[in-house]
Length: 239
Length: 232
Image (spheres, helix red, strand yellow):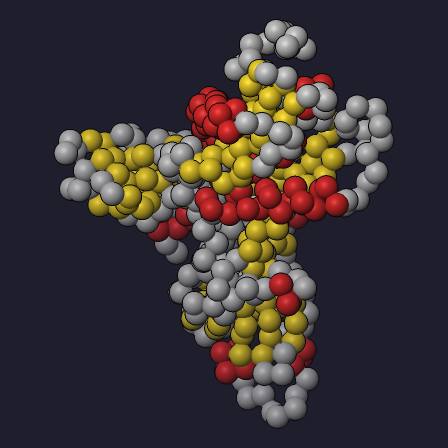
């Protein structure tokens, strides 16, 4: 049997397209093997790592993953917690125990803590096979969001918006002076001076559009300097 | 037998001029347009999302729900009454059965994937055009699929086997029409209907020709899907 790679690295493939033939190749996420051929399971970009062929998804809904930091909106108050919309096919539940370290007396009005429509930064602690999702507010940086605004981006562009070790979002924070929280589910919360907030939103939209192009960090630092007049270091670490 | 030349002058095995575009509805999770001759189909995919009414939920897998709709001004001048009909209900069902073998919704228990197929202009072959558009839209929505789905109608007008019938051929008094949907990589048939009468040999020939035509359709789908992400 001839061993052959059909799809180039970084090329776009469609579902059912043959990526490689031969038993020495291994099907990674987003691909499957049928007899000797490895085929694409969804629309995506090929990533060849040695003999492992992976597919990077380009579109679709956010799929909840354990330990993801996300932004949720309270949509219902339950007997023992809150139900959150997390921009995914399934809603999440935050129980009293995971919601706050405060003591909540029996029979308390839970809307005092989180009311309908409130936004929170939380972390996914459990996802079951039936997609029941538990989130928690216990952890560094997890809190209720007051004021500001929430915008939506594609969850597949979030890694670019955060940048390597948070470099991109740190740069926008420095340039605009805004508070920004990026949720893995594609919701982003911003708070700052109104004019600066608009610049930050535009910067995020620009990153979303140009996510697939190289040299983005340098281009963004120039763009931000031109917009705000603040000189920012392109290579920033986590703050 | 007098049918020597087709009403619109093309060859017996020739498809009407086609075009396809993916990503036309920004608000939708996936969308596509497919045009073949004067038949135009738009498909928009929403979901996977929460399914209501709750009794329809399936804890084993997500479900696919299709909504096929001909717009009132489509067709041949007779106003199409808006809303579902006995015909549209059947077409929704056969389209769902045609698309489901390619899809894997096991990852989405209790959820639904909604596909809306709208036809602003029709000239026969709407269920096939709808399947073509819906299959591209589902891929665009990033759903897990093992293959795309291609569909085209074959048929008989008098003694000739023809491909991709238009309305005049479809409604010819001595004829039949056979819509076929195929998974292009495995060659499996997911839709096969027949309206009219044909001999065993004629049916075989019609299905073979439809399957061959699906290769051309598949190339078009492939191109449209790749262009969507090259453009960005």
